[in-house]
Image (cartoon, rainbow, N blue to C red):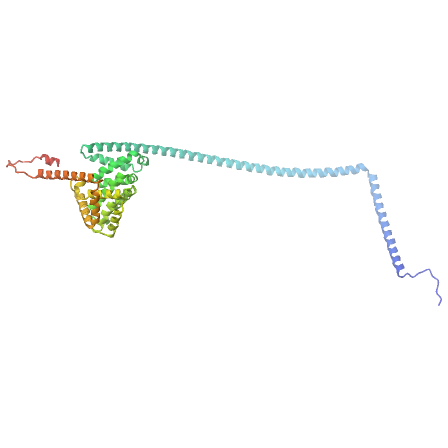
Length: 407
C-alpha cells in the first residue's frame, strides 16, 4: 500500500513530553505578559489622573485627612481628660470628707485621752493624798503607842497596874495592822514585845489574841514574843477544864509559836509544851506520842537539853514563877509531877542537869526566891488569923478597916 505524503508527525515518548512542556511554558508566558500589560495600563491611568489633578490637590486632601484625624483625636483626648478630671474631683472630694471625718475622730480621741489623763492624774493625786493622810495617821498612832508603852513601864516600875493604858495600847496596836511601814519600824517590835509580856502577865487572853492577830508577822519573828506566847497558850491549855480537842484556836496558836521557837533555834521550849499538851491529851498517861517526844528530848544538844530541864524545873512548883499559887501554876506542877513519875529516866535527866555547874547557881536562886515567897504567904496567913477582941458596944454601921479597903 502506498502512503499519502503529509506534514503531520506523530509524537511519541520523549518528543511528546518536550512538546507538552514547551506548550505549557508558552501559554504561561502569554498569561504573564497579558497581566503585566493590564497593570501597566492601570498605572498609566493613575498617573494620568494625578497629572490631571495635580500634586497640590493630593497634598490638600492629605492635609484635610490629617486635620480631621487630629481633631477627632483631640476631641477624644479632651473627653477623656474631662472624664478623668471629674473622677479626680470626686476622688478629691471623697478624700476631703475622709480627712474631715478622720480629723473629727482624732479630735474626739484626743478629748477622750485628755479626759482620761485628767481623771487618772486626779485619781493618783487623790490616792497619794489619801495615802499620805493614812501614813500620817499611822505615824500619829505609832507615836501614841510609844507614849503608852513608856507610861506603862513607868507605872509598872512603881507597882501600879495601868489598866487604861494597856487597853489604849492594845487598840492602837490593832489599828496598825494594815500599816506595813510602821510594822517595819525596829522600835515597833520592842513595843509589841513589852505589850505582849505585860498582857501575858495579866492573863488578858482576848487582848493578847487581838494584838497577836494584828501583828502576827512581827510576833513570829521575835524570840521574846514566841517564848511569851508559847508559855501563855501552853498554860492556858493545861489549866483549862476542857480537852485539847475542845480548844482548837488555842492549840493552833500554841503550835504556831512553838514552831517559831524551833525556827529561832530554841527547840527545847517547843518540845516541852508539845510534851505537856500531848500528856494531857492522853489523859495524863504515857502514849506513843509522848514516848516519841521524850526520845527527841534525849537527842537534844547539851545546851538545849539543859534549858529544857530548867524549864521543867520552873513549872514543877507554883512559887518558882508566880508570887502566889494559882490554878494555872498548880495544874502545871501536878502535870510535871505525873509526867516525871511516868518517865523515871526523864526525871533522872532533869535532876542530873539541875545539879550541873551551869544550872546549880540559878536553881539555888530560884529555890531561895521560892522560900521567900512561901514565907510571905505564911506571914500573911498569920496576920489574917483573928485575935480575941474585948466586947464592944454595938454600932449602927461598921466602918471598913484598912485591910478591907485594900482588898
